[in-house]
Image (tube, rainbow, N blue to C red; front, side, top):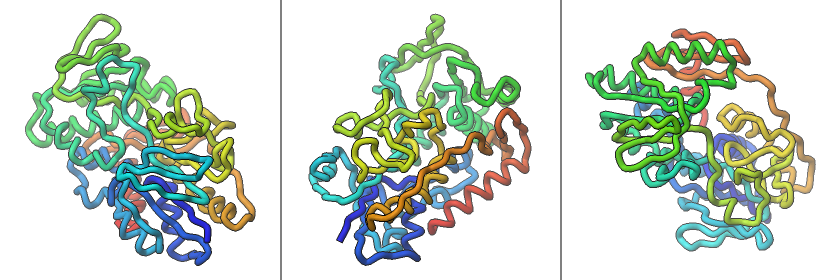
Length: 362
């Protein structure tokens, strides 16, 4: 009997578990290893922060999903992998042996390039940390977000909306960004989201953060900003797991995979989502859209590899629809260089997100 181990409960692995419910093979044993019974859906982080969703509405019960899929669930954190011996070591000292292993463990919100950040940053990844950290943001009178991308802006606007709606208008929310907001979306979209963010009374400071101490964030232009909580959302950073292994990684430490989602040197090791970089498409965004689209390919390839059968390549999209919540049930929709702000965009996002969680038994 072959053993397939899924490490992490990310989008691609959720698809595999759902498919296994109706497509079971008695010759293959499946195991999911995750640090928490619950997987919190990142698309609803902003809505939970704003108070739109309850905690239960944002999470998927991995143990229950595994039970339906006849997949063993193990509540552990994988600390290291030996791809030659095909062993995984967990935080409880367990050693698991696999024939095929897939990683969908996401990324971390941290940066070792900023002095002092690691000691003072509010980590929301891995995402099982998310609920308790949002309570800290709600209580924070001065919150600083580092980063000018969608994740940082969306969380800042959602937090500000919660503050205003709950009578904390005097609580400061600041975004420090080294480049224009949503720069990759183009000039017009960047200008539009900048004006919108300022209109919501979220403070913007353009500068590169060089240092963080216990009470202040220091930028490269000599200014400093007081904070109660600081959170880095300046782009995904590689999880430490791969850096401590012999698995090939890209220059940033992400697992390097080919178009079949296999490690470039170990074909029985797969990787999807934020934790992996496609060798032939290194600039593909690390986001939920990519991870969701990788799910069907991963399912076919894990089963194909286990049966010594056919595997298929993943073909990235050049452009995709993205919607971020900007507070008060309004969405900022982008597609290529096109963008708009509307209530129906948020309703579309809400429909997509609620449907996603319910699909997996949420």
